[in-house]
Length: 119
Image (cartoon, rainbow, N blue to C red; front, side, top):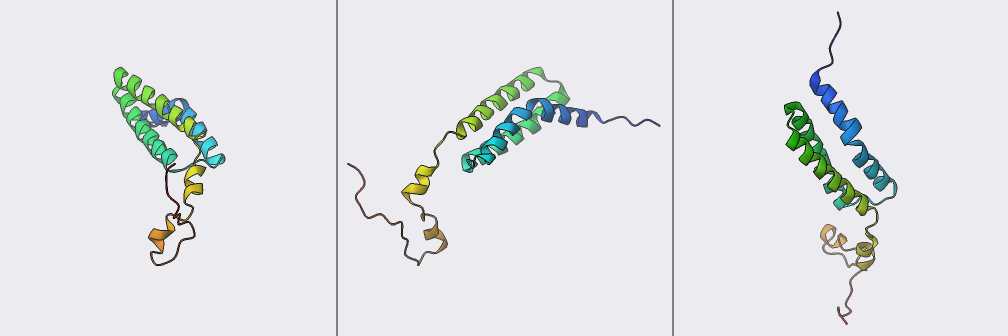
């Protein structure tokens, strides 16, 4: 008795190996460089959603949907690549204890800045 691999498993394998490989490489590099912040997480979730829709498009054999989702995947991958070069340190330097105010509302924050803002 010879078992046949289900068609959906073949499609998922194709999407992961061909369509999802470049975004995964970009996001592994992003994580490795320590630049994985909220923007990269949102783009990563978006890419996973598009990958699921791409599996559905391959299953339905809908060429315009496949083309559209692949273009969206490329654009999201480019956004993820640009995330590597975004300097997130500006938020850390401006107010390092900014979120601690919400965690401990009665504590005195060291990072309060009473200097006037502007020129």
